[in-house]
Image (cartoon, rainbow, N blue to C red; front, side, top):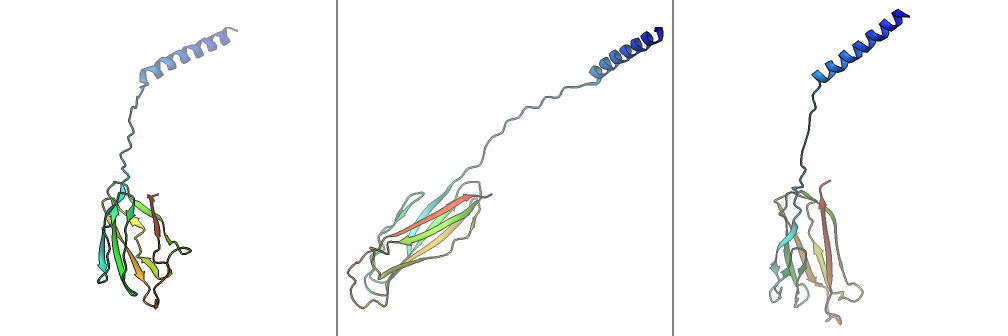
Length: 164
């Protein structure tokens, strides 16, 4: 029995020595930090101008904000056209991807003598870069009679998203 008490006593002494030794060689490290969001999203329209206008036509003065464009094209005769150049700029520091581009017109109520087309846009717009979209409106050159409906509304949506 004395031997078991000696063994138990020796084990207790070893545990105490190990505890003291552990605390002597243990170090507590503290880590503090702050996370900040520094990304700035700023994709917007920076300019709109008529760059190609058939003689006698009126491109008006296109109006725009950071996110909208409005123009009032006045076409004179069949074959006439007006081309607008819309500048889109990424003034943020996050690259942008073209997610969706849709242009439509009021085909049901609009003049069938008026059509439009757009140029392609690059699908990637790096921070600090710009892209240019051309939008052209046409008075159908095959029109032989003055159309009853003389107007057509054109609507477009261009959506950019953050690079994934």
